[in-house]
Picture (cartoon, rainbow, N blue to C red):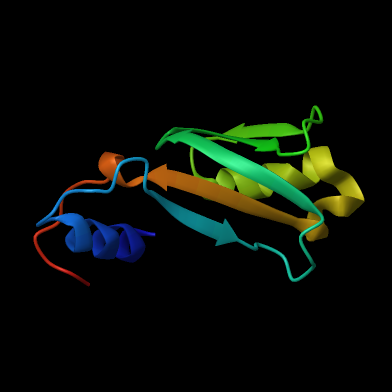
Length: 100
């Protein structure tokens, strides 16, 4: 994660981000296909992931690892079909002076 955000931040360090540009991460914690997609938002220490289909499936945790560990509790047998989609606004990334 740090390498990705550092690299994107470096790309935009001289010119600034494009309005509404986002860094999009697709995280596949299990080997299965993406049947359930959870949108991630929040800040370190307070993340939340909600099913993009609008169901009541939702988990929270201090880390992304906590989110992954909590998904089987709400998704049951469908957990191996789950993925996380995380969109981070480029403007919210720390400015980096060098690429990785």
